[in-house]
Length: 107
Image (cartoon, rainbow, N blue to C red):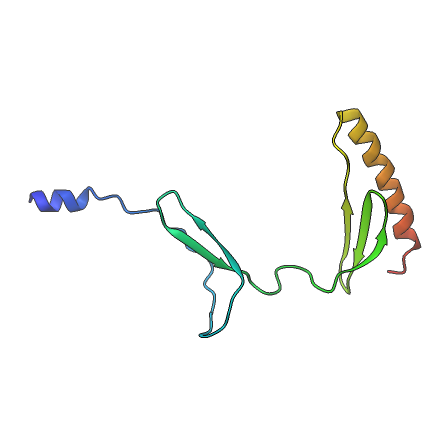
């Protein structure tokens, strides 16, 4: 009976169920891993098609860049840190520049 109490008191690690992937033998996969709090190593292969491909830089401004692919327009804005007022002012200026650049592109 004491043995049963010991077994009943064992805490099992938390498991999260991810969407299953079909991995093939002898194929090298890119991916990432992390060490969970319970000591388990969680391995996650990168899935193809999760990131847009064929993005080409169409505009390269001082504080922004615009990339285009067949089905996607990506706008990347980079601002220097500063006071909230400075960042908001810079953001408004960059948005206006982006609007102008987008209006000139043949989408």
